Image 1 (spheres, rainbow, N blue to C red):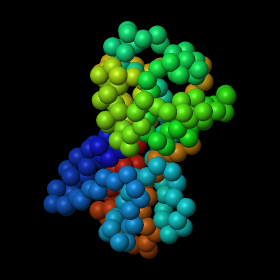
Image 2: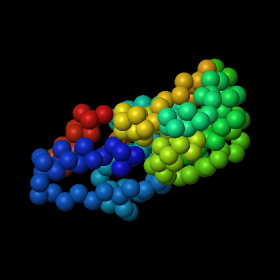
Image 3: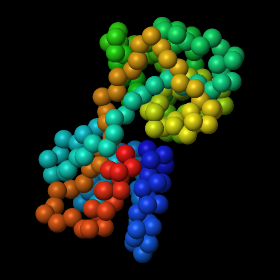
Image 4: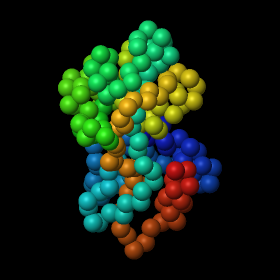
Length: 190
């Protein structure tokens, strides 16, 4: 998420505060704000910690994508059942997503994806090369869809993502103006 969504915010912030050094930590696990000296975090799912403020930035829709090369060589799936005849790539957490109409989880349909990975960008690259069907958040493939490297596949049922994107920061009586400025930039960009 950081590689795909943060560059515009960092650019805008750096122009406003050219002498402020930003330290960006990209991690797949939740870090401790105090221990890791973190002022702000982007997180998927609303935190349950009452010592944190969570502001929703965006929903997080998840869909199916494939390259034009893959589509020309393979029959495009039209139904959820059709997915069983394809190589499918996803991040592990996506296996828990449910389909809107059937209420089945993705794991019920595809018990063993062709590739299960923690890095979405690797999966995007493989899909662009025509290796299979990708399950990915829309923000994770926006550039590839806009350039025509990936095409969204519409099925008879859609995945429901219950995980939104939040800007999270500790509750303090005083939040530094530079941190408030970054919060405002992120809220505007999303």
